[in-house]
Length: 311
Image 1: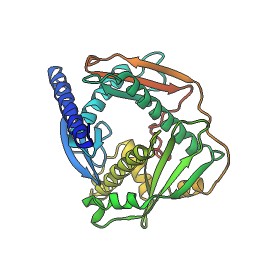
Image 2 (image 1 turned 90 degrees about the horizontal axis):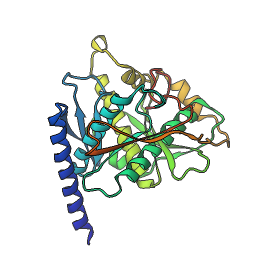
Image 3 (image 1 turned 30 degrees about the vertical axis):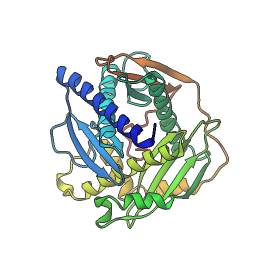
Image 4 (image 1 turned 90 degrees about the vertical axis):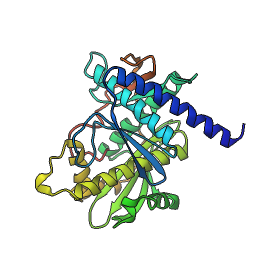
C-alpha cells in the first residue's frame, strides 16, 4: 500500500472514531464545544465544556494537534474522555497524586493495539513529568543544551500570532540526563525579547515525535501569553496555570531559569519503581481505553506554585 492510500485510510479511521465518541458524549450530555486553530504546521482542535470567555489558556480544555484535521479532532475528543476519567477517579484510595499525571487514553474503535498504545503513552507522560520536575528542582541533575534546529523557527513563522510582532529571540533545547531511558525528554525554551521564557516539552522514543509535541506545547504557551498581554491587567483574573505562565514569560522568574541553566553536572535522573500501572475504568470504557502510570512518590507536576518552570 502506498503512502497516500495509508494517509487516506488513517484519516477515515479517525473521522469514524470521532463520530462514535461524539455520539457517546452526546448520549451522556457531555459533548464539548470544539474549536480549530492553526499552530504553525499543526491544526489544533480544542475541546472545552467551559462556555465562558477565557483569559489565556483554559486549563480545563483538551487539545489535539496534528497536521491532519481528522486526527486533531480525534485526539481532542479522546483526551476529553481521558479528562473525564481523571475526574471520576482523582483522589481515590491508592491512585497516587491527585492530578492528571501519567494518564493516557487511546480509542478502542478500529484498533488492535489500544492497550499497548495507551500504556506506552501513559508511561511516556509519567517519565516526562517526573523527569522535568526532578531536573528543575535538583541542580545536581545534568543536561545537554543546544540551539533548536532551523526547522523549528520555520514552523513557528507559519503562525499568524508569531508572524505579527514576534517576541521570540531564540529557541534552545534542554535534554536532561535520564538513566537507562528508552527515549528522550526534550524541553524547548523560547527567550522573549525584553521579557522572560516560555516552554514546551515532551518525552518519546522518536526524535521527530518528541520535537513536534514539544513545539506544539511551546506555541500553545506562547500564544496564551500573547493573549494575556492583550487583556487589561485590572480585569485579569488569572488561575494558577496562567499565573505561572505569566510569571516566567514576563521575566519575573528570569533569575530562577538562568540560574538553573548555568549549573552543569554529570548526574542522571534515576527513575524509581512504578507505584501505579493499571487500566482505569470509566463511563466510556467501551469506546476509549484509559491507562495510568505513576512512579513512587511522584510529585504533582501541575501543583499551584508559580515558581515551578514546568508547564
